[in-house]
Structure formats: structure tokens, C-alpha cells
Amino acid sequence: MKKYLLISLLLVVFVACKQKENPIVFEKYDETSEIEAQQNHKNDRMKLKMIQSKYNDMNEVFKSFENDLAYFSEEDYQNLIPFILEKDIPTIQEHVKNRILSYEKIALFYLYRIRKYESNNELFLNAIISLNPTILEEARLKDKNKPADTEFSLYGLPILLKDNINTVGMATSAGAFVLKDNQTSEDAFIVKKLKENGALILGKANLSEWAYFFCSGCPVGYSAVGGQTLNPYGRKVFETGGSSSGSGVGVAANYAVAAVGTETSGSILSPSGKNAVVGLKPTIGLLSRTGIVPISSTLDTPGPMTKSVIDNAIFLNAMLGKDNEDEKSVESNVNFVSELKKYSLKGKRFGALENLMTDSLYTRNISILQRNGAEIVKINPERAQLNGFLTLLNVDMKYDLPKYLKNHADSEIKITSVSDVVEFNSLDSLKRMPYNQELFDGIVRDSTTLSELEIIKTNLENSGRAYFNNVIDSLKLDAFLSINNYHAGFAAVAKYPCLTVPMGFDKTGEPKNMTFISKQFEEEKLLKIGYAFEKLTKIRKLPKDYK
Image 1 (cartoon, rainbow, N blue to C red):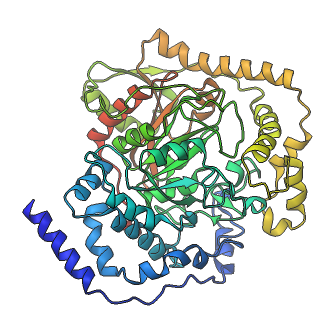
Image 2: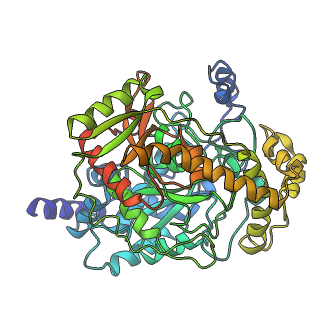
């Protein structure tokens, strides 16, 4: 305690003597040679056409913080690194309790860190679209009104939201130019819950435009508004995963304490796996979707993306609530943190897929589970057919997007349908849709009726559940073991939860995650399994250029 008080005193003395720093300017550059080099990439989706945003000006994004950051130096930043970087929520809150940190200093730390890397043309990641202009004022209020017990709370901590989630004071663009000025008058339901629980909204994360249901075969992580999101573990080398690309990258690079992603099929699991992040795709209905730009009211869900499992559980708690406007929303009284540490892997049964046994990281981590008492059952489930999956997404979005635009978008937004978006983008295709809008064209063409859609939905759900249940029930499995988002489609149509946790890095240095899948509303069990697994592996590490 004496050591902490001394450090706190030294920080206070230093701050009192600090000098005003010169402003940092974000400068655009000629990326022609970079784009040419990308055409030699072995992955067609990494043959980028552009990297920098044509629309977003980060100088404007940071304008509100110019004065505060002028008095926050590199030395201030370095002094705070040991207390914030890669630390979990309980640890950061303990440092606040001991007066080593304040919520204002935490917010300044993340603002400085984002500016430090995003203003560097050799290191920027394009993970951020916008920042909350009042976050420092809000942080100061949190310092004044801090409750006694914040250990397992998001109180005062800055988080990022995927930029398809409505937030008052920041536009909600879904990455699309047509929505770049979509200033909504009301927060999404989960944002209201986060604020009620004391979280600070730091800003909006970049994403694959329209949650990657827009262009076909295009780079993941690209949006017209945000530009091309880049992976900190292999900038312009590895994909970021999508569609919650900026959320995954932002957490991996420590641009915030945590981030919210959204998933229809793989959009939390994929970027979490590609960025060594813990991602939870919850059961449909556990978290509200109201105020989130949709793809599918059948399959969409938000979910937490964090650096650790305990943070994921804390974050999940803070978003819970029954939303009467969302017909799928359910009440949950589970505290996902309280029993997290009281779990043993001994005797637990996990299904390991035979066709994944060629993956050395998968088999190595299965061995770790076995050595710690888990029973591994090799499985080879009969592959389900997901007939009509694309049709489900097409027809849901055809009807769900107009509902969002009518009920939850800025009244100044004039588009009312997918057809309107297609027509608007065609007026300047090079800037607004450089990778085409093939999937949106497909939505417009799809003539499936709503009665036909109901049959497709039922068949898909039955197929997805049979795929998992046939092995989970007959072999009495606690969870199904996958990699990254390999089985996201089956879990999506089954509406089953998935938790993905870092399990290592392959020979190239690319991250890879173990993904645990179980039945509806078994998030508590998944988080316990994930916490026990994480304790054994402790494999996550910072990207080397972002330490």
C-alpha cells in the first residue's frame, strides 16, 4: 500500500509540473505502392484496393481533446502503462481504489494511445471511426461519484462499440457513407444498460461495412467510412476477421478496456480468433438488439469482446436486461461472475472433432484439457445442410433494415430501403462501393415470400440443433470444441452460444482460438469452462509493435 501511495504522489507532482505538448496531426499519404504490393498477397481478400478512409478525418475526431492531450505527455503515458496495459477489470479497479489511477487518467491514457498509433502511418490500424467528445467530462464525474465497490464493475471504464450500435452524441454509420451522419436521438438498449452500470463509451469501432453483408469476396474489416481495418499481429499480412473487426483489433491493441461486437454468423468469433481476443456470441435473446443496425432479426446478437474471460463475464452482466421492444429478449437473473472461479475441468466431457485433429494447436490444447482431468471424446457429427441460409439473411434484411431506418435512425436520413442504398452507392461507386455491392443486389432480387421464409427458418434451426444435439446428448458432452468461427453457421441457426478463447499462435505468428459451443442459455457454463481453460494456457500476448 505504501508503494502505491508513493507512486500516486509522484504522479501528482509530475502532472503539476508538466509542459504543454505540441499537437499531433494526422496526415494522409500516397498509398499507391502499398496497394500495388498487396496485389501479390496469396489471399485474394487481402488484395486491397484502398487502406485509408476517403471520408474520415481523425484530426476532427480528436479535436475535442486537443487541450487535454496537450498537457498529457509521453512520460505521463509511460507512467500509466504498468497499471492499465493488458490488465483485467478487477486489477484496474483496484488501482483506482488505491488512488494510483483515476477514471479521467484512464480515459486520457486510451485517447493518447489511440492517437499515438493511429497518427503513425507505419502503425495505424484504422480500428476507430469516432470518439465520444464528452468522455473526459463524464470520467471526471465518475471520479467524483465513485461507489464503494467497483471490483467487478465497468464503472468509469472506457469501452468501444461497434459502429452499428446507436449511441447519442456519435453517428452510427454501419461503416456506410449513406449513414455517416446518422445521429440517433436515443441509445441502443444495451448502451442504456452499459451507462446505467457506469461504463464510459469511448468511441465507435470500425467494422466490415453493413456487418459484412454487402460485398462478395471483399476484404474483411473494410468500410467506406472507416477504411481498411488492419491486424496488429500482422499488419496487412493477416486478416482481421469480420465483421466486428475494429472491436477485435481495438481490444487486441489495448485501445479500450473492452468492446462490443455483433454477430449474425461468425462476426464476433472470427475477429476474436484472428486477434487473440475472448469473444462471446450469446444465445439469441439474452442481449437486446434494439437500436442496432440489423442484418437478421432471426440471428443477430451483440456480445462482449475482451482480453480475458473474467472481463467478458463482467461485461455481459452489464448489458443484461429484458427489452420489451425486442420480441426475442428474455430476462436473466444470472450473475456470470459470482461462480466463475468455482469450476473444475475434472470429469467434464468435451467433443473434439476428428477432422480438426490435423491442427497442432487444437490437439496441443486438447492435451492440456486432458492432463487437467477433462475427458475428450472424438466426434464426427453428420454434417448438416444449411439450405436457405443466404435466403434467410436476404429476406430478413429486406424487411428489418427499413424498420431500423424508420424507428431508430436519424430523421434526416432519407433512405428507406436496401434498394435506396444500392441506388445511392451507384452514384459514386469508386468511393462508396469499391468492392461492389453484390450481396445488396442479391437482397433486392430475392423474391422469397414471408411464408416461405418461415419454413426456411424452421428447417435451418432444426438442422443446426440436430448437428450439435446428436453428439452432445448421446455422449453427454459439456461442450463442443471448435476453432475460431469454423462452426459459426451451425451455432447461428441453432441459436446456440459460443465462447472463443485464445489458444496460441501458429508458425507465422497468426493468433488462433479454441471455441466452446453449448446449448441455449448455457453461457454461465461456457464462461466457467473458458475461465478454467484460460488459467491453464495464459497464452494471450500483446502484438509486438503495440507494447
